[in-house]
Image (tube, helix red, strand yellow):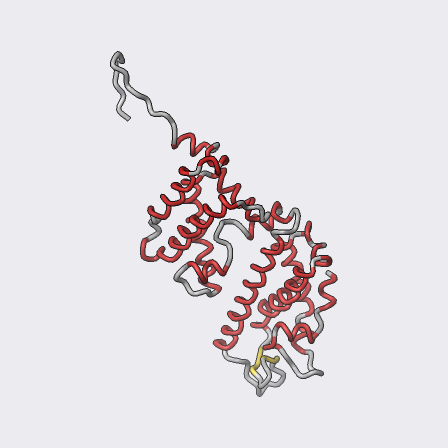
Length: 280
């Protein structure tokens, strides 16, 4: 937990300006001491992984992302219970009975803003962790990159939904359904390979082409779900399969899959001398 030693009052207020207090007033910062520890522990348990925790001491890029992530996460998890009051310099803690806490709408807006910053920091950390040896094989990698649609920026730039924390959770659920539909078209074996390559930053050009087509389908599925009722866009699905079928030599895992074998199974041909004819 060496990283916690650098989170001073000044560092914390740099990343959470809304919590900035006068120099001698450390009320918010002091109340969050245990939350910094909890936020750091959660970051290791659900993102970095215990196996790669040491990277925070040697990887400067990860470290510079982890510090604001811990600060913001600690504040977001706690701020609703702090009786925050809006002051001229930001949000402070109510210190007298005559001072009313900030309105719920203002606190909600603050939490949403910080939560979106947190999503972005997590995304940046994932991109860096993908280059760390061994991280891509961890439970945390599988959890954070569960489908090809795993980045908030994908929601922002590829769908018609506005990037909010609620829409992000909604999109993740729809992405899981879309991924299952894709598995029926490209095979479990190849989807697992794509995700493995994605988590370890080892994807080749041929794979990237398929991923782009898969993401187009997933983004459409997420955007149109309320209108289509979850009916998949068959045109976009066919484009994915077309890529695999036209360039089979580039996709040996797909061509070696049980799905491919079923898709290309030779149908029985009736012969003139057969006593019984089969219609298939």
